Each structure stands twice: as structure tokens, then as C-alpha cells.
Length: 72
Image 1 (spheres, rainbow, N blue to C red):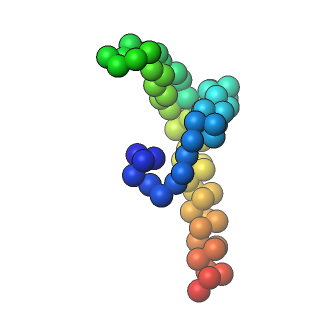
Image 2 (cartoon, one colour):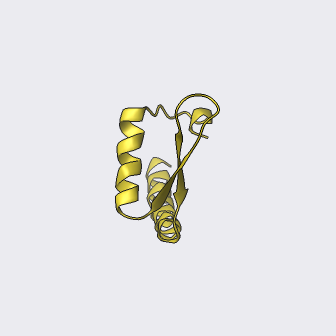
């Protein structure tokens, strides 16, 4: 999904964020064997993470709406 966006995200940015989200119990990590190379980490939102995401989306929409009003 990130590859399809216009965002330039690198490991040095992404994994520290994911580690902070794990520390706050917003995501769980599962390791799975890979057919190609070493085992891979998979990140899943917890119930707490889904609640936080909803709150964040509401806040983001409010900020985005305010910026749109300023631009117009």
C-alpha cells in the first residue's frame, strides 16, 4: 500500500515508528517463515490500536478541513 502512495518511506523511518506502536500496544508482531530469505515480521492492529486509529482519523479530518478552509 505504501508503494502505491506518493510517500517516500524508508526502513529507517518505518521500523522505529512500528516499534513505538508496539510499545504502546497498538500493534502486535508475528513472525512467519518466508519462502525467500529470513523470517518476516507481520504487524497487526490491536483493539487498542484500532481505537487510536479512529481517534487519529477524526483529528486528521478536522485539521485537514481547517487547512482546506484557509486555502480557499
